[in-house]
Image (cartoon, rainbow, N blue to C red; front, side, top):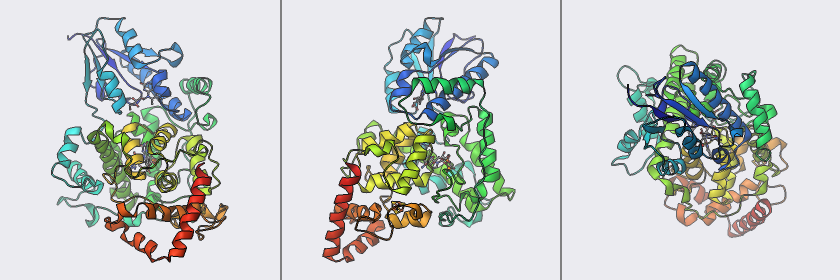
Length: 507
Ligand code: FAD
Ligand code: DLZ
Ligand code: SF4
C-alpha cells in the first residue's frame, strides 16, 4: 500500500472519476475541499454561481464519503480565507507524502498553487475532463497560419468519430449546417417549461448561506433553478434532448422577449464543473439523431458547440498564456457603464439580456455575443472591465472559457486570433433575430436622432474609426464599401450622432 496523499478538489472539478480523484484510494487518501472567501470573492460572482458551486461541492463530499473516503471539508462559515489556508490546516491532521491536485482552470490559480510552500511536495495532474489534451491541441496548431475553430472541429469529429459515416465522411455529406441555424424568433413556437427542481436540505442551507454572506452580489436566489448533482445534470440533458434539441438548430441564434433560454440546453455550468462528460453528451445527441428524434442540422449544430467551440476556446486559453488577458488591440478604454449592473440602459434588447444575466446568471450565446458583447465592442468599452463583468455574472463562467469568448470572440481584442472578423452589427441584425425592437423606445430603422437605435450609429462609428485596421479583412469589405458609399454629409452626421450617443450611454 502506498503512502497517503492529500487530494485537493476544487469547486469546478467535481467528477469523482477524473482529475486528482481518478487515482485516489478510499481508506488511504484524504480529500480536502474548501469553500473560501478568496475563490468566492475574486470577482463579484453571481449568487447563483456561488450557491451552485457550494451545493455541488457538498453533494460530492457526501457522495465521496459514501464511497469510503475521508473528506476534510471546510464550509464557508468555518472561516478559511484561502485554499492554501485550508490545505495547510488539513496537512496538520495526518501524515501525507504529497498534495495532489488537478490543474485549475485559470492561470491565476495555477500560479498560486505552484508557488505554495507546504510541508509536502505539490503534484498537479493534467485535467482530463476535456477531449483535447494540451498536447492534442498543440499538435493541431502545429504548422497552421490560422487557428480557425471550423478546422479544429472537423479534426475532432474525425478523431472521436462523431457524426461520421462508415467511409469516414461527415454524415449528410457536409461538416456544417450553420446556414440552417439562423432563424429569428417570431413567436410562432411555444417554448417548453423547464425542469423544476425541489431543492434538498443541502441546497436550502447553501441558499441561506449565500443570501447571508453575499448581500452585494448580483443574483435573485428566489429564482434558483440549478441542479447540484450529476444525476440532476443528466436529467437536464435528457430533458433538453426530448424537448429542446429538435428546435435548437433553428432557434440557436434567436432573441426572444418571452424566454431567457428558448431551446438552449442549459448544461454549460454542469459541463464546466464536471457533472456532465462532454463526450457522453455528444454521443447522446448523436444517438438521438440516429434514432430520428431530431434533424441532422440540430444535432450537428449542438455537437459543434460542445465538441468544437468548447474544446477550441480552452485550447486557445492555454496556448495564448497569461498575457492574453492584457490584449486590447483596438485600444478600447471607455469605462463600463454602471447600468451593466442594473439593466437600465433603456435599450430593450440590452436590458432584457442584462437583467436575466444579473438575476439568473444566464444569457444564451447570441445575447452574450451579438447584444451585450456587440454593444461593448462598437462603443469601445474597456476590455478588462468587460471581461471581469462576464466572469462575475454568468453561472458557467471560468476564465478558461470566459476569456477567449469575451476578449477574443466578442471584443476582437486579440486582433483576430480567434475570430475571422469582429462580431459587430447594427440594430437591423437584432431586429431580424427576434422581437425586442417592437417594445423598444428606439427605432431600428433610424440611424440619427433621439429615437434612432444606438446600435446603428455606433456600428458605423466603429467601422469608421477602425477602417485602417479592417481594410485588409475581406470579410469586412462589403460593410466598409457601404460606409464609403455614403455622402460625406451623411457620414459626418452619423459620426457626430454616434459621439453624442456614446457619451450619453457610457457616462
Ligand atoms: P447551448 O446553446 O445549449 O450550447 C450547448 C453547449 O455548447 C453549452 O452548454 C457549452 O458547453 C457549449 N458552447 C457553446 N458555445 C460555446 C463557446 N463559444 N465556448 C464554449 N462552449 C460553448 N460559455 C461558458 O461555458 N462559460 C462562459 O463563461 C462563457 N462566456 C461567454 C462569453 C461570451 C462573450 C460569449 C459570446 C460566449 C460565452 N460562452 C461561455 C459560450 C456560450 O454562450 C455558453 O456556453 C452558452 O450560452 C451556455 O448556455 P447553454 O448551456 O444553454 O448552451
Ligand atoms: C468559482 C468558485 C467559487 C465561487 N468558490 C470556490 C470555492 O469556494 N472553493 C473552490 O475550491 N472553488 C471555488 N470556485 C472555483 C474556483 O475558483 C475554480 O477552481 C477556478 O476558477 C479555476 O477554474
Ligand atoms: Fe435593441 Fe435597437 Fe432594437 Fe432597441 S431598437 S431593441 S436598442 S436593436
